[in-house]
Length: 525
Image 1 (spheres, rainbow, N blue to C red):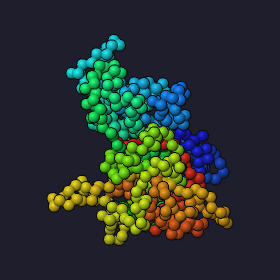
Image 2: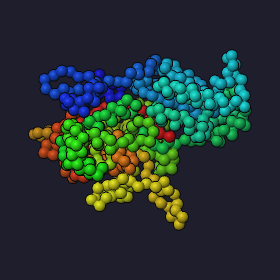
Image 3: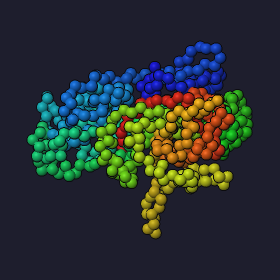
Image 4: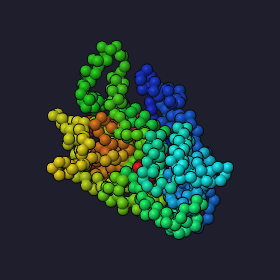
């Protein structure tokens, strides 16, 4: 059966073993195969999981229907409990003393028996008695950070940091730790009705914090808005998606020589020069393997830390983006934090700039999806990288980005802002069209005006390009598909689907059936 992240019992994506090639060696190292007459094919979902066992969970905690203070998807939704138990998740508690953090932490540890709690308060417990000493506060937080770091190094999940985290800077260490260790971060506040009532908090907290101190902390409490909200794939699924894309990239380079030449042109080398160099070195690998090896080295992940990939729902810029605060305040957004969603990856798009996995969003996901690029797109817009780095031959060059962008120059004029990282997932219309003789791709309906069409996962980027470039590549591809619909004449068979080459080094692989992948909705901070 499909492992937790690619959860489709009928996943169509196959990785075909080509005996004697570099690709087959890679597949043999991580696939199980069945002997059959002719080529050996292996469903991607048979790829071996990492050695780490899934985290243990109990049944959802029993609670009354009226107990809204524990109404969180990761406590009540069985699907979400299962997905989180098979992912690396980092809960960061936020709340004033007496607001109900301990009750919430206890519910999480009861639901996930493999969880670990890291709290600065633990430093002050001696022989079961709490003895607070303000002079040791720095040492207490250092001990808490060391405990969290050790848990992440051992891939323990979930990790819960049970501190007040009133200000954003207090969360910084844990946010960076989780990002570099490939954990999905879920900031968490109690839903108790008295969480902002200083008088009641003073009566309820066990540490003797007075009313005046609590009133001051209430006014200091930061409303932390993420850089973006997204659906995050877990670590294993992120690596598997990258593997699938790299394999299909090599296959497309083999099937479309013009595509391979265009991508090699991007790195200033011709296919003839590449073959000549390998002949001189005595390398007898097939051309397709040579191309694939070079191109895999060309495309690098667009993510600065960690390897998790995601589908962006809304870019917020930590509250600076247009509409970010309104989006952040929506009950739907807040109630969906930490919830598991299944996305459908319908195709993978390759361009000289990026590799993007296109995803179909369901109605629940579309209600969380907010991309102004779609409504602003006019079919003629160029990405910043293309505008700033176009070569003489018309091919887009690497971005020459200066750290001073977005700041005011000496003359007082404001420069263009730095492009924000934007990783979304691809949306396709899977509605069945009338059957015709011969092959008809699944995505024949034009997407040029369809809401959600720019949803994608940025799998990798070429040097000098940021993940936000995938946005523009996807929107251009939608226009190309609308201008010249796919047919049997312009598509070829590839592993798991059909591939079509467009002008300008753009190639798209359409899966016969979508890859289904579990994700966790949260923010990147």
